[in-house]
Length: 192
Image 1 (cartoon, rainbow, N blue to C red):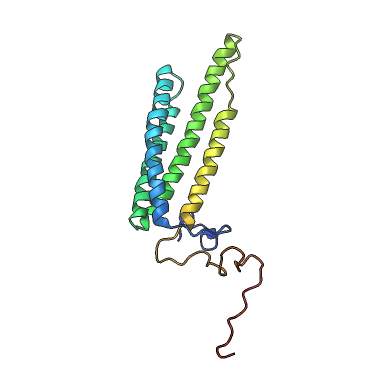
Image 2: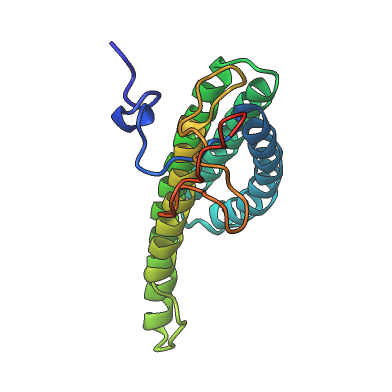
């Protein structure tokens, strides 16, 4: 039984076709995942530690940890893809899924913390300017970015795989490029 996360129905014939080299994509995403893990560990971990020390919530700590683990798993998968190991795609997709789960947990922790701060501010009749719209919008943006990366990983091809779309026409400026122009005339027969 195929895994729907690893091999979605649109993977064989995706609606938007890009011929993306899996090795290069793996290297780029591995480097970005390493940088993301470092930033999530520093920034997310510090904010979560301050929130935990302040007594707001333990959920921020959990969200930061899941996000860091997702980045590390994604980095391992990206480096495996770079070395040509097809198993790296699965690791990278699982890393993206863990990153999305971490972002969701972090959103819940942020909303809980903001509701606690807002109730403190309302007790003193002060407008703190906190809103739950910020974490929700941040999660939506994270979801969109991770979905685009997931799509690119799913449709990426390793050397030796058949390309998604064959090049059409002769290309070049003003030439037949498959964009509605007429094909070039056949070459003249020899001796005519």
